[in-house]
Image (cartoon, rainbow over all chains, first blue to last red; front, side, top):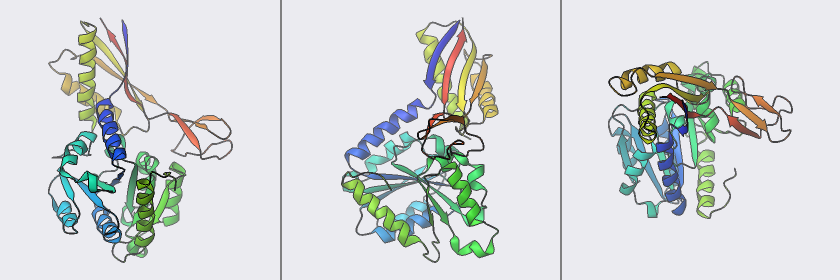
Length: 224
Length: 113
């Protein structure tokens, strides 16, 4: 006999993601889920972004790592509330981990929560956390074929940050090809070119984010 | 990479069904996985074999149907299958697409006694 089930295997995660999203919406907090492969410079981008947005914006950070609290210590040094989640081998953050971390953040005081996911371009694409948008980071030392190799995350993200632009002359990375590939997968992707070393592009990225945070606060539209 | 945790969820969901419908034996579990889901079918079956050992589900066949990515163009209403992850309408080159399938990660049905 055939028994129809039609049950989403990820439904437990998605139910909690919906709860998180409702809570963030109530508190008018813009939530970013930052995803990349290991070593692309997520934490450095966060440091640069935070330095640019403080003191105007009230920020909080959740750091996801397999082990250690090194990234959280870097963020803490900037005077921003931060919670470290160690996944103990897990390859992604899930909605429940975020839910458990929230009581340790002063949500009432925040305008923007930045979640730095575990360095991995595959699994985080499948796990909603309750975020407003995903930011995918690609560094020029990783090769311009990353979007075509890991299409799901480029499709799911609203923003692509191409990082380590200062190293571009020393690599074979073809910037035009990388952008074209990313835009084929996601024609609506907004692309920022950054160097955390030189500061190139940080202004335009951080200013964009700042206006996004302010508009979110006012309950305005979420368009670009 | 997260197939193990997916299979844990899957087994829990199937066991719920087994209980609710007083199933004696599960022969086959048919799941549908979209091509955009970050799931490797062979890892899923491998994890299922390991995790179902010694349980009521041991010996059941985990059948995976891969679902293609299909979209509808909101401009010209063309429906098409997305190949090579190129998200443009092949007819009018529009980019305002509604995704119809390809993200599934669900248990479709069970064959049981």
